[in-house]
Amino acid sequence: MPHPGYLYYFRRDKGCTCMSKSVQSNSAVLVHFTLKLDDGSTAESTRNNGKPALFRLGDGSLSEGLEQHLLGLKAGDKATFSLEPDAAFGVSTPDLIQYFSRREFMDAGEPSIGAIMLFTAMDGSEMPGVIREINGDSITVDFNHPLAGHTVHFDIDVLEVEPALEA
Image 1 (cartoon, rainbow, N blue to C red):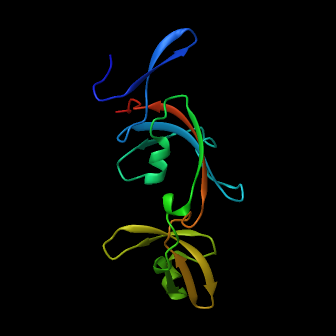
Image 2 (cartoon, rainbow, N blue to C red):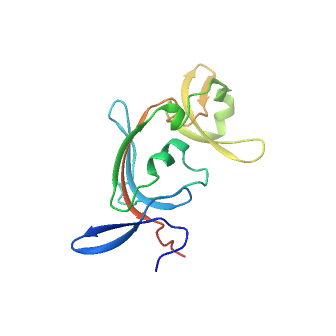
Image 3 (cartoon, rainbow, N blue to C red):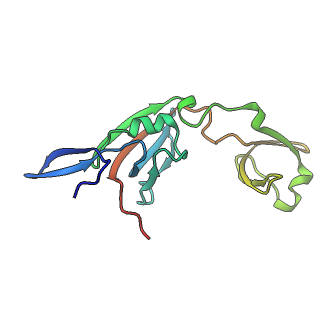
């Protein structure tokens, strides 16, 4: 039975007429995706573990640029597109690069360049930071998103729109 407020499209699949919901501004969408960088390396992929990702548009978890590319897609659709840094994970902000003394890492063990570590803020929240440089007693930590400043390339397969959520 059609659900009020959904936009439906009719299509033919193997001789039968089916109704298919398209992704709207508040839809839940189940997708497989691969996210690549300009050099062709894969930054993330749901296909590696066979577990698709469930996104809810409009909840603030996705960039506006990504949401715009998902709008109107239906189950079975495939999309390939690129997002510039400002439409993806943002540009790298120098204010989010901080310097620490090696003494502050004594309890955490010896840090290594490229390692992602969790840091506790004054309010008790945790933030991931990437160790960018170790120079004598100084350790440089970058709190920007790891993909900030990068153009990213998406390859998305839409599996379901408004999938039933497990209770």
